[in-house]
Image 1: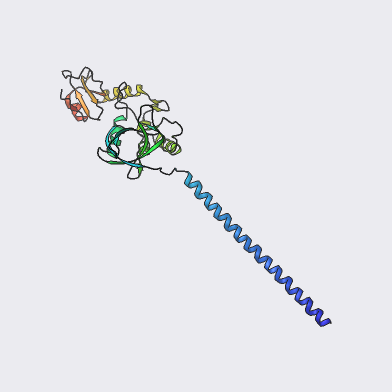
Image 2: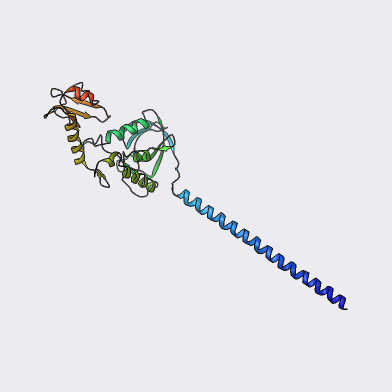
Length: 271
């Protein structure tokens, strides 16, 4: 009887030990699973946070560049043969072809930069905005060349400012503003002229001041007569007093001699 009781107690003890051991293993296993789950969630959150810092490129179509009008406006030909004028979204470059404004500082540079990126006849990727068109009927879009967005490149070079921000076309706004802040910090392009570019646009008085400074720097006489002008195509042309277009020409620079004008990169008007 005692022998049976001993074996019975021994069996109960073994069962208790096994249950304790199994419980401990389960806790360890549960802890490992929980930690793994937390780690996975943490990694996923980190990845999501990183991915959300930059917007993904939307759906695009390919078009052919007809010509660059100025830094932020381009004419393209669609695959169906139709031509469209496109305004680059969320940016504004200084004027070069405005009917009532002078050529503004860094306008020709912005225009040349865009022309060099997208010469006539080249292919460009176009991502249209949500509203698609502005009040003038122009398409609103982001352009891509070799996978790089032209809108961003202009901001990086200090040749454009963030502007014309209207919902719902604000997809890349945060990125654009970060790029602009860096250009402002580096004082490049439009940001190299104090108080020239602002949220309201470009200060034309700075254009006049810049022209006056160029005139003083380039001229070897007190009363220069030769007018240097940059036309809508970005060509530098100088006009002499006897020229046909002399009186109606608004000069960006003035020169005392034709040689001075030529040294500055201007060619003589044919009329």
